Structure formats: structure tokens, C-alpha cells
Image 1: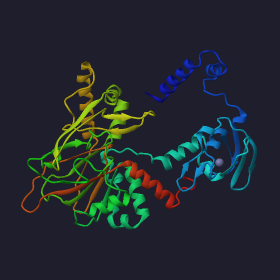
Image 2: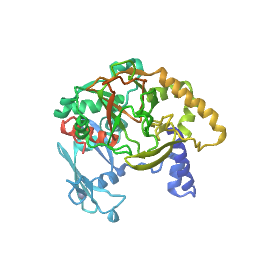
Image 3: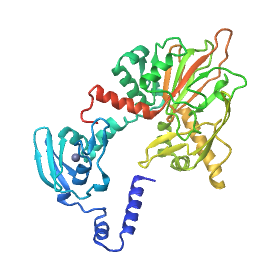
Image 4: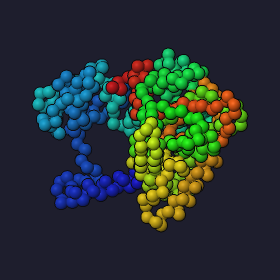
Length: 418
Ligand SMILES: [Zn+2]
């Protein structure tokens, strides 16, 4: 649903709820908003030559005193049973760095001006916060730009320097891809990188997985044949966010190179040029599936979700795509089947049109956004001692964004965040 449609339907519900003609209902009907803005519902403050408005109820809810907010738990502790939805300031005193408010019940609050400015309700401030603290803005790419967007980072620098760690994670969240070089030739080297961020995400394949040719495998990734482009683990409701593949041994022969495609580019292209097919891929639920035995334990995973998942703002939040791990159940109506297959096929073709080819070397860790970038691999053949071997691990986006924010505070890139 588009933002505008959502807004309209929300308003519609509000109007219906208050249609009885009481004062509030009339306000909604005539002014198209829930509450009439009254001058005394806000405190206006000039901060750094800008006049900013802060609602009384929000200020009181966010009082930073020790009775209302626990400084080390960084959590609100005020008693909601006693909360007044209509507090009135009786005195407002502003000095150079802070403002003190005395409320009509006698409670006193103090707010740092930087802290307040950071939480300002103007669209400009809200946008800045969203893009700098909430989540970095994603930049889409075509395969022909891969060399430019896939930044290179040094293994030891990431371990030793917070700035190097920050730069790597920032690039990864912006482009959905980044390469780490000079990784030691060890099966545990990847742990150093994963632990530097937070911790690995476990799946039924374990904390780490080895990608090597195995004849009687539980997963098609463990074959040396062509591996079609896909996202990993679409059958998880809580899908692992990033995939880190450490190349220990690369094949010396032909093949073994990765194919990588930014699905946000593909999806945006489809939204513009093929809106009907785009809509089908955003609305039709598919059943993703993985069945087998690993480490002696059986699994039977199912998750229903569209190929392109959008949030309430129409932004892409997750891509699911895997031909081997798409189940044969089709949860939607029968008439949607053929059109959906056509849309799915178009998505597949376009992803190949926009693809990048890249062959990792021993010592590389290829890191990519598993719910954004499709990845695949060309067929290869192990010869003699040259046995291609990768070690993989997943790290969730929650942990990466969290680390990025901690580093922003630590490196003093943003003041007044917490
Ligand atoms: Zn307080």
C-alpha cells in the first residue's frame, strides 16, 4: 500500500470512529487531523538560530531526571499509571546549553539543547536522524559499476581499528557488498571478523558452514555444478542478514567465480518499467522450503513471503529468491500462478542482465547483504590438490546496525544520540 493510500485509509478509520459529531470528530472532519494544534500544547525554543516546537506530552514523557529515566539502563522508568497526557509548563527557563521546565504538578525537567535538537520534529531533522543514525541510505548499483561500489578493506585493520571497522560496515550497509583482503589462511580467521561485529547467527547448518564439493549433499550449494543466483535461507522468518564467505582455496581452473546482482536495482527497474509484474512479486506469497538432516538433526523449514518485501513506506526491506528452495505449494489463487511465473522469470532475467562477475582469491572474505544481493557461482572442477574451499558465516543486520551506531558515538561522529 502506498504511503498516501495508507494515510487516507487511516484518516478514513479516524473519521469513522469519531463520526458521532463530538468536538473531536468535527475537528477531524474539518481539519483532517487527529488533534487540533493548540499553541499551549507545545514549547517553542530557539536552538542554534532555529525555532523548534516540542509537544508538552512528549517532553514530559521524555523527562531525563533520575525519577523518570534510568541513566545507566538508558530506559524510561516513569510510572505510566500516574502519567498525565495534558501536562502544562508553568515555567520555562533556557540557558546556553539546556532548558528547565517546571510542570503544573511541580515536577521539574531539564533537557540538553543538543539532545532536543537531535529529536526535533521538523522533517529535515527527522530525515537527518533516519539517515545518519537509524540506518544508512542504500545506494543501488548495476553490475557494470561493481568495481566502484565493492570497496576493499584490510583484515588486520578491521581487527585493530574502529575506524576501519566503521568504514567497512558503512560501505556494506550502503552498497550491500564489501570485500576484505589479506585474511590469514586459517579456518578460524573468519571468527575474528564476525566477533569484531558481534556474534554469528546460527542456522541448522551450524554457526559456520564449509562450501566444498560434496556428492551426497544436503544442500545444492555443496556441489561444484553451476549454482543459480539466489538469496540464502529464504525459508527463515528471521532471515540471516549478511553472508560472509572466506575463500581459503579458489579453483585454479576455469569457473568458480561469483555472480552478484543488486536486487534493489532490479526491483526499482521493474517498478518503473514493469509495474504489474513488480506488484505481483511484492504481493504474492511464495512458500520457501528446506528439508533435510544436518549434524544428525532433521529439519523441515517453511516460510511464506513474497519475492520483494516492502515496508509501509514502500521501501524494500527484504528479497527472497531461490529456485531450489522455493516449495511446490502455491498459497495464492490459481489464476495468479501463470502471471506470477512470468513476473518471477522477468526478475530472474533482469538480475542476469544487471549482474557482476567476480572471482575471489584465497585470503578474500566476500561480504554481502543476503536479503538484498543475489549471489551464485559458475561451475568449476576440482583437480588434484586444488580443492576449492570456502568457509561461511552469517551475521544479522540488527547486530551490524547496532555496531555502526556504537561506533558513531565512540568515534564522536554524532553528539546527543543516546
Ligand atoms: Zn522527571
